[in-house]
Image 1 (spheres, rainbow, N blue to C red):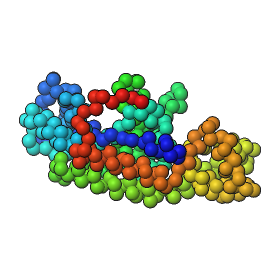
Image 2: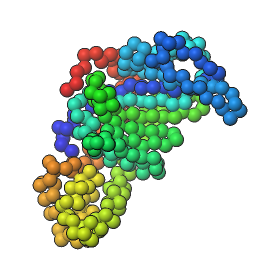
Image 3: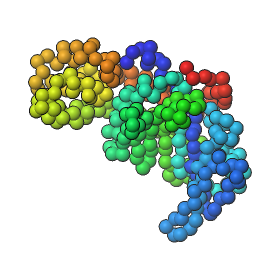
Image 4: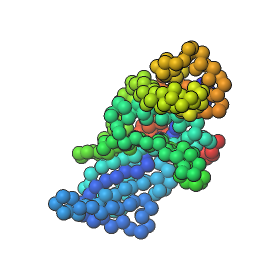
Length: 311
């Protein structure tokens, strides 16, 4: 990735929502309905319980440090007269206000999320596009224990607001976790997950090459499609120069894979999504994800962002 572009990759951390479970029916006053969504459920014994999905950012504006977050959650639960509860899920949001952030960094996030999916054998993984325009709008991997989603926030909000893209780490919590325990989940456990994703990036390249080879044999060797045409069709599936060269060696009908790969990149890099990454690029992105989370968890960020403008 271009060094200047890589250094523009910046995120701001906060908690999006907290989900808690408590026994019985919780009555949410109308004036708090934008802050708390109450969902009634029955357990296997037929006993009624409430799932409260709390967005503390709605209370007095966006919260950007963990101390203010804890205070807001305590205030909300107190007003609902809830003292006995179990945390079941928390979503940490990492936001960008940069113009075109989602489009600019979609591909490297796909690289990393595929690494995460392979590291944890995740089958529930997908990318979504607009039905009528093929515009990319989200990437996601989901397990029973955690989820990650990177999405075009500006598109979701129909162009309103100053957040252009959002990267969410979502954790399901078991046992008697406290708000303090969440600092360990997002401060430590997610670092382990991202390291495992980084460790799988070599395999990611082999994975995509294996998926593409049968199609190459059918379309190029079987039906005469030009090699460059095939490579343009799958430009977003090649993440490194090494991966592309290795693919060209493996398909077996290319005389000089290195020269073809370099010529293709030189001729078509502005016509398709043929951006290549180094392991250092991916490490930089993961470091920024972790830094943004840590800054929020360690109360290093100012509690208001009222002066920020979309650039």
